[in-house]
Length: 101
Image (cartoon, rainbow, N blue to C red; front, side):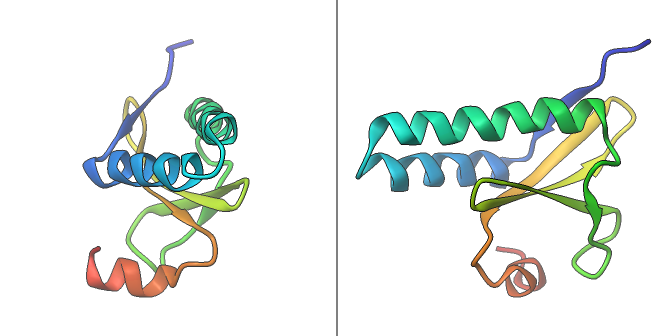
C-alpha cells in the first residue's frame, strides 16, 4: 500500500501561524497542543482522504473536517491531500472563500 501524504498550501501555513500566535498570547502549552491536534488530523485525513464532508458550495473538490474549534479545508491529490485552509469555525467561511482571502 502506498503511503499517502499531505501538503500545506501557503494560506494554510499562514492560518496555522495565526492560530498558534492567537492562542499563545494566553497559553503557550495550549497553543502547542492545538497545533499538535490539527497536525495529527492532517495525518488521519491523508490516510482516510474522504473522511471529510464535501464542500462543493465553497470551491470545486473541497472537503472539510473539524478539529477543536477549527475547520480543516482540503482537496484530494494523487499523492494524498492538500490542506487549503485551517479556519476558526465561527468565521464567515463562505465570504472567505468567495473573496479568496
